[in-house]
Image (cartoon, rainbow, N blue to C red; front, side, top):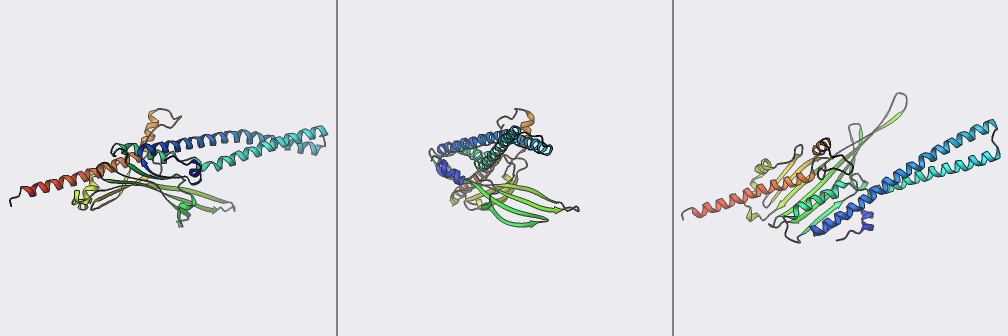
Length: 330
């Protein structure tokens, strides 16, 4: 499915059910759109400063010279005309610079969070080897910022802080693996934006703002209950068998007949996969900082492997019991 660019720039959402190869092509399109927006915003910022700053200086200097000359009554008609032209030029440059900054702000929604489509790319490539050829994958992405207004769920006081609470279920990936298991991966980000105002003894009012949040990653697998009998009794084993990257917290384990689900909590500064950004030096210091961040793709992979470890144990136990039953004398 080709990305409808004009519609995407209205909604900033993506949803499709297609083979992995087609979805990866769409992710490349989103990557190019994002890179273009980043380049446009950088160019507008540079041009805006290059225009507004000298324009403001010219306007202020012209006004200062004009005011001083008028007070001393030392300005000629030609000088007044020159100052007027210079002032118009400076004011025009200043206005143009401010308009460029305004245009840069309007392009902000197009500057996507690279981690979001990046996570989709990594997981699609990793799952591809476990899918039947041409098997469809359902992918749903919400590439808007996590704190847009329609993601706000409530407003409340937290201590002395006026707090806005946001919940952003932005990522869903669903597919059926070659062995028949149905896999679902979801990611939800939660954000709190806090603000409070304080008036000092001198009467000055100051406003403080604070932002905090985290991400929840959930991986679930559905299988045929008759192939994995007794799975619903293995919650403690599933909990102990789960392996996650360092600092990632296992929040919840759910086990039922034919279903196993794990949920982990990551920092809001998670990465799709540690890697060097363009312009970053290839240095041990960089890699140390990169590896300290929660790796979402590695976490999802380890959760899926942990689930399959439990499913494998369940399958082996069922076969062992069946073999013992056949060996018992009639």
